[in-house]
Image 1 (cartoon, helix red, strand yellow):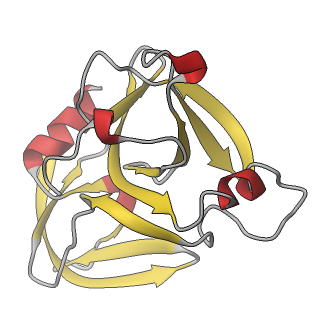
Image 2: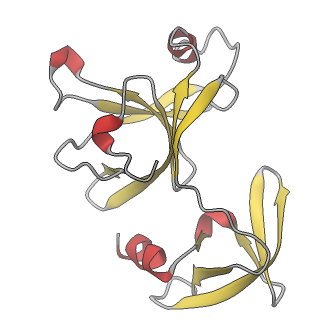
Amino acid sequence: MNDFKKSDLKTGYILTFDDGRKGIVIKDINGDASQSLILFIKDNKVDDFVRMDTTSDDLYCRKGAYREKNIIKVEKLEDGYLLGGLLKPSWNLFDINSIPKKSVYNRESVLRKGDTFYVIEDNKPFFIECVVDEIYITDDTTVVVDTKGNEYNAQNIYTTEGEGIKAYCI
């Protein structure tokens, strides 16, 4: 679904952001479409929240003046009743990652051996073009190794130079 928009989001949808955070959509509070929230989940609890910007249909969320997070994955619960259990951590039956859900939208880039990716050079506005040699997971972190043997956390790489520039300028 390449044409998925923010207006397509429904209450209970689980969002995954480009920084790995997860959130739950709460739409149309008091029947007002401009009163919608995203509840951020950390350690099985609501950790933070942000008002959903309904002035744009782009899939992003702005937290604070400069921190923009792109929504890269949207999932819906297989059973809406599970939303209550997820928001009641004392049940401790499941967490946001294990709760049964189906993907509605997925923009996560899949890198394979030989693909090009970009990294920011030591917090400077310069990008290094790299080629994937190996990908592995350690301590729940995906690591991408370039052809020169350098290792990068997958959350700190960009599949296009434009994506990296956008993230650096925010």
